[in-house]
Image (cartoon, rainbow, N blue to C red):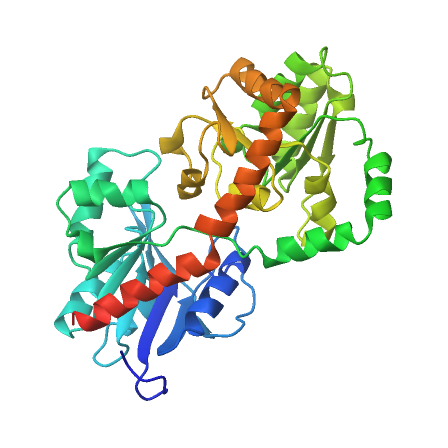
Length: 388
């Protein structure tokens, strides 16, 4: 292992489509590891605002877009530049075949004896042979592969990839802001009681959805479930928080047609954790009908059981955190009746709900932690540096 000096540290360059807020702590932790000199190269991903770097070096370079027949390809020059002779010791690249710069960068790095890591999902939600084959062919050019979950990684070991080249950095959230927000409201119990009364959340049950409003997330199914549950739970409230004016208008119209408007509260997106926390602390269940991702770990941070679709292959990598009947429930995909049954089960069995709440907290304190995620990233970088 190299001594912890700048001249002897392993230089690690990471190329990413953006510098998202939820990634800052990850890169900061990685940069703080002994013997690592990290530089991030990032661009501007649509819908993902960039934030300032904290605790690590970062360089912003815009992506060039190339229109090719019916496809739009991207050229992000840091991929190519970081593969130049002596540019870095280890190069971590976004595993996205829409980058026209990716394959040239991998080949250039190999010629210049710079080990590379492909970091990404490793699969498509609409998987098909014509998507899988080129992705795996490109993977063979890399020194190592870094996945977000075990399920995707297993597909590659099953396909014959050397397990020694495969690393799993479970996608995790920095839970510190959530813990700080929880403590704030624990220190102001009267304010939380007032908040619940003000928003008619005292009696419950309360179901919470927090995310960008998009048709793919199927919040409409939650409204249909509320309709089916309304008779048996007179005080039932569903709270839907998120940006997306067009989808919010559609959902409000649906709520009106289902005659559940008084039971549904729509709130614009909230980005401050302390302001968002009382909604989580007032909820009994977190429901994200489809396409769930990091929101699952956000809910677990508040000890909320999560209800989502059983079509796990169409979910984001974080779906691996949920275990049916352990820290949440999976309902039959697309079925409002099945979703209503899952919610009913949690409303009626408070012992089960409490048990799932404890398991949810265990999941984010024992498995899906920032430290575990960065441990895997560091292990991949050190493996590559030892296998130039």
